[in-house]
Image (tube, rainbow, N blue to C red):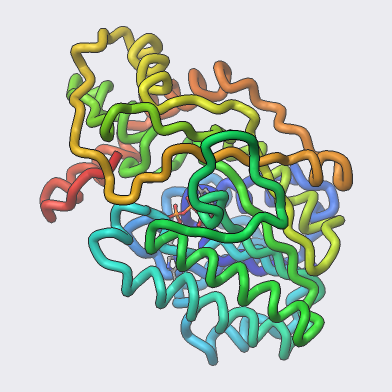
Length: 335
Ligand code: NAD
C-alpha cells in the first residue's frame, strides 16, 4: 500500500505519520510506502518527523500541493491520500488571505484533479468545524449549511465543496472530515494552547481575546488521528464525518486550567481587543462517526492537557527557536 500524506510535517499531519509508522493504525501497518508532501512553510518542521526519520517506508518530498506536475507524479500508484496541507491560522488569514486561497483552494483542487486522474482508492480531506460559522445552542450535524466567517474558514469551506464535487462528478472516493480544536504536542506556538503554555513557562502574561467567553470543543490530536484512520479505512465515499472531542470550554476557563497547571494566578491574564468576526461558539455532534465507524475520543481532557503542558515544558528546544524567529521578524503572536 502506498499512502500520500500532504502537510505531514505540520502539527496534526506529523502525528498521523508518526503513529502510522509506529503501527498504531492496523490497516496501515503493512504500508510499504508513506510519502509526505510538504512545502515546509513556517508551520512545517523537519523536527516533527525526527522520531521516524530514516524509516525505510518513509519518503519525505519537499514541494507545493499547487505544483501540478509534481503532484501528478506522486499520485501515480497511490492507494490512499490523507490531505492535511493548509494554511491553518485564522489570525494570519485576517492579515492576508492570498496564501489561504492559493494553498487551501487551488492546492486542494490540484490534488483532487491528480487523484481522479490516477484512480486513487481513497481521498480523505481534513477540514474543520469552522466552516459552519458560529452556533449559540445545540451542535452541528454533517448536513448543516456552511456559513464561514473568517477567510481561513471560507477557504476550507471552498475546499470541502470541491472535494465533494469531485466525488459526485468524477466518482473520486472522497471523504471529508471536520474536527474541532486540536491540542497536543508539536503544535506551532501561535495557536491558543501552545501560545498560552509557552508564555506561562517563560513567565509572560497570556493574551485573552475579548471577554474570553468564546467556546471551543477540544480534541486531542491523537483522538483526531484515530478518527481519521477509521475514515481512511471504512468511511463511505461522498460522506462527511465529524470528529469531535466532547470537551466544550470557554477560552477563559481553558486559561484558568493552564494557570492552575503551571502554578500561576489570574494576574497573568492580559485582555486584548477581540479578533475580527470572532466566532462565539463551535460545537460538533460526532454521533455519526461513532455509530458508523466506532469512533470514540479516548483522551480525557484533564490528562491530555496536563500531558501537553509537560511536553512543552520538556521540549523548549523545539519551541524556543520558533518563538525567537517570530519575535525577530516582528510577527504578531495570535491567541
Ligand atoms: P499546520 O499549520 O500545523 O500544518 C500545515 C502543514 O501544511 C505544514 O507542514 C505546512 O508546511 C504544510 N503546507 C502549507 N502549505 C502547503 C503547500 N502549499 N504545499 C504543501 N504543504 C503545505 O496545520 P495543522 O494544525 O496540522 O492542520 C492540519 C489540517 O487540519 C489543516 O487542513 C487544518 O485546516 C485542519 N484542522 C486543524 C485544526 C487544528 O486545531 N489545528 C482544527 C480543524 C482542522
